[in-house]
Image (cartoon, rainbow, N blue to C red):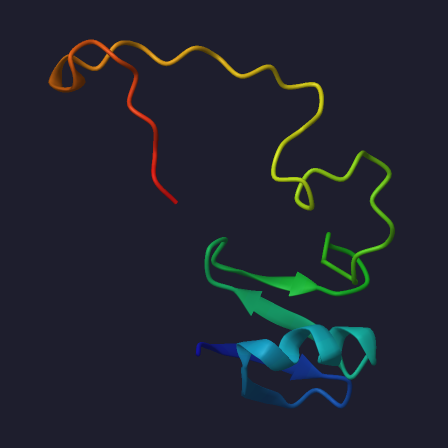
Length: 90
């Protein structure tokens, strides 16, 4: 669990658990949060922020485990198996 620095609407600063960030953004309790990867403050109303996933317009790939447009490629021969392709075990 990480802690994220946030600025509340009233101007106070605090560190919150990272899992609370989405809720604080959605309920508009904070104006900014610090994004360490960019070393800067993110302004909720200005900068790109995940505001909750809407419906995905593309085809669903996670449910089936593969994209229907994908064609499986042949596996190269595996010398340790006498030249037969190795098959991953799940």
